[in-house]
Image 1 (cartoon, rainbow, N blue to C red):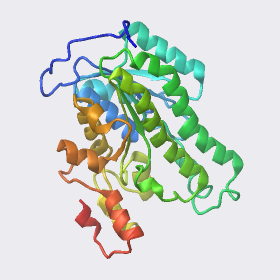
Image 2: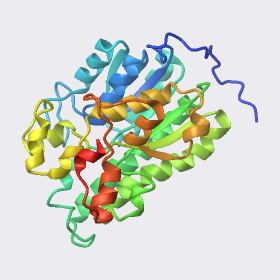
Image 3: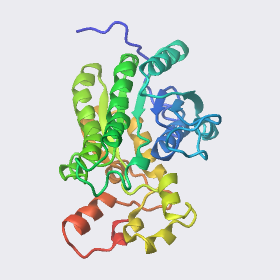
Length: 323
């Protein structure tokens, strides 16, 4: 099958510090956390990055945080060396997502990297989900988790993939919690388990479809993420995050959002990524080992390996041994 309408561009490597200088990216769910960090790191590598989310300087999403906005995320992308473009978007609204696709098409004519980092359901977890059987979980909360973690991803993929396959090397990244290996274990609650396992299968299936176009679909996961919300939960900041270890010893393996983001940016610049990653899942530590990146403190934390040994293997291990 031929694809005469595919946009073919010069793929010769550019400046080593700006390997994505000619690339167009969209990070769906870039208001905060890993989404924002991935947008910034793609920008640091030179990309033009559209950032979407529901919290703006004039409107707050159900997450309820006013301290991070998509406008700020776009400014951080630009400050890092890329071009950040904020587009307020509720990815559960098909018409809004279609309008987003139309805008990128009109302004750029293609999309090279699509990072699907939509979530925003943390407020539903503690008290409502974790520690409860599926039938004890409020149905409305459970269904909302599936909307935020699965339906939004499917809508985004369906409406943006026609633009992505115009690229000479399409990259689709699903961001979730866990990998195919770690999520072979039950994730405490049926709704959460479905929401965090479905993106792995999305990447697997879309990998089959994108292969025909020379593309890559991969699911990625942070470890114990020091997101803004997690830091707030423990009452610490990025500057003194280790103070939270007294409350939660496993926080010693926590990682900054930049850790996963650096791995994803390296993956996006990897010309051999299709053969290496297509249809697979990987955690931040696996990407770090593959591409030689480290966290902001120079460490290389591996939270999933720690949890496997300590929580599931019953071994007496120190979290510090997994940094």
